[in-house]
Length: 356
Image 1 (cartoon, rainbow, N blue to C red):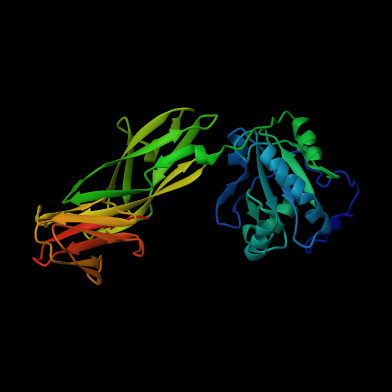
Image 2: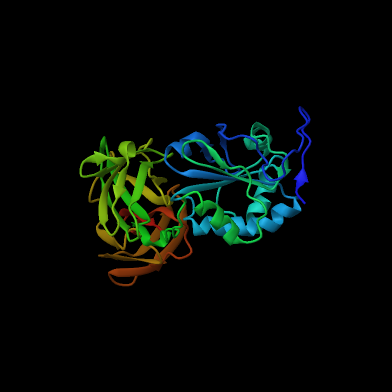
C-alpha cells in the first residue's frame, strides 16, 4: 500500500487513490538536482519535451518495488534526449541519501532531494502518497495524475505511449567522438596559437553542441569562423567537423586547464596544456623531443646530450638520465599529466607535455 503523508503546514485528505494530484495544470519550479545541476520545469516543457516526475523516498517500500520499471522505461524512451524528460523528487532525503538511492538503483536521470526543495514541490502538487508518478505535456497540462499500479516496465511504456510519446534508442555516446582529448597550445604575448578539435557524429540523429566553455580561461571554438561558445551549433548525423580552438590564459606561466564541449549527449572535456613563449628565446634547445604531448615515453635526439634532467612545472627535478650517443628514450608512464622540461648537460632546455 502506498505510504501516506501528513504535512506540518496543512493536512491533505485522500478522496481518490487513483489520482494523487488533483491538479490539471503544472506548477513551475526552478531548482537544482542532487548533483547541483539546474532543473527548470517550464524551460524543459518549452523545448517540446513532456516531463515525467516520480515522487519517492528511500524508505518507501512501493517506491523500491517500482523504481526498476521506471528506470528501464527511461531507457526505452531515449534517456531524456527525445519526447520525454524523466526526473524524480524526494520530500525527505538529502543529497547524500539521494546518492545512496542513485547508486543502488542505477538512476541516470535527475534526482531532486530536500536541498532542492523536494517537500515544497510535493506540496505544490498536492501529492500525499508515494510513489506518485505524473506526466506533464509541453502545453503544461498534467495528463497523467498518477500511474498506479506499476507492476512491469510495460505498464509505464503503455501509459506514456497512450499520450503520443514514442520510444527511442538512447544515443550510443561512444559514437560521438571528440578528439584529441588533450591539446598543446602556445601563447606568445597577446597572440594565441590555435589547434584543431575533430568532432565526429556517428550516432543515428543530429547532435547539438550547446556551447564551448572553460572555467580556467577565456576560450573560442570556431567553426567556419563562427564562435560556437556563444551561438552553439548542430553536428549533422554521419558528419565530421573541425573546430579551431583558441584560448587566453590568465597568466603568462605554463599551466593546464579544461575545455568543456557541452552537447545534448553530455559534456566532453579536453585538457589544454599551455606553454608561454612570452620573453623566452626561441630555438634555445639544440635537441628534439618526440612525441609531444607524450603518453608512455619520450625520445630525445640531439648532439652531446650527456646527463639529462627532467623537471616539473615548479622547477623540481623528478628524474635524471645519462645518455649514450645522440638519442635517449625515457619512460614517462609513472609521471603525472602536466608540463615538464628536459635539460641537457650543456644547459639547453626544452618543454614537453605528458598527457596519459
